[in-house]
Length: 64
Image (cartoon, rainbow, N blue to C red):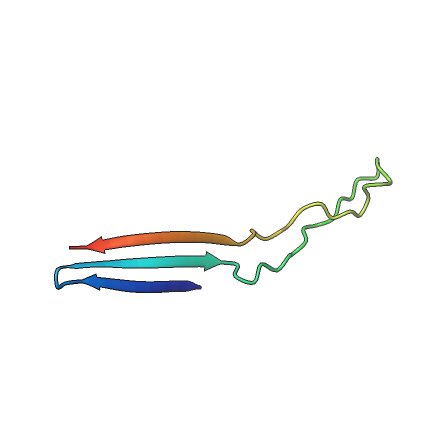
């Protein structure tokens, strides 16, 4: 998802402000569970996330 807003000052100067967001809803997708038979307490436990968490990128462009 991207949101952009443009601002203008007089005829020769303008700026564009933008925000780009990936994984907007931030749904958790579990990775594969641990299948180590050495530890009965850790067998089948999910300890990490398969997808990347929400990331945001901000930008500013100045046109003159």
